[in-house]
Image (cartoon, rainbow, N blue to C red; front, side, top):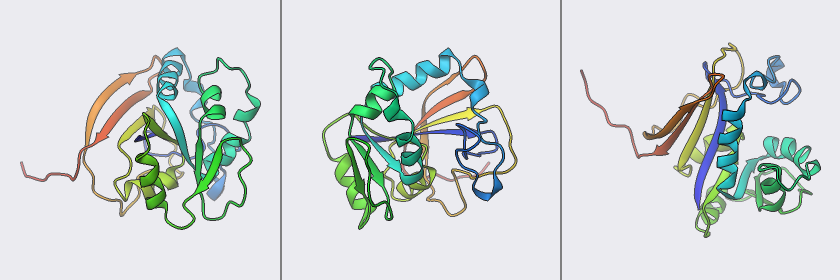
Length: 202
């Protein structure tokens, strides 16, 4: 399976608490819910396309707990997100989680995250998807395990908050594989990992 990663971020790279005010107040963050005003049919169509390609999900503990508190209650079989999250295998990467009650969930990464994720990628299927879970994504990118990035850039600057790309990340080149803009100005860019950066001068 190909490992794909979908992340919402602001123009200044903030990824913290896009979905609601109480999602993640770590560090005194007061801007939660910043993605909500930008939902439209274009955004919904892209999300449906992404989830239609899923064969399994790989989530960090924080995102898993947020999802597990909400999506099992959504029982509409025609909902493109809920139907897949509730029925497909879910792997939560955690060294501290002791139980995962959401049906179809297995805890991985207690001993060797890289080994566990590599084994998952070797299974047959289309996409193993990570959504949110920025801390997990940074660990995966440090080992070249993410194949595709879907970065949804929202036209807002917050000034504070957690970032996806931090100092010390693995230098990596990507190829732009697709781009579109929603009616409300969200730029959706898809990047395929393309090895190491090349350097030159002008």
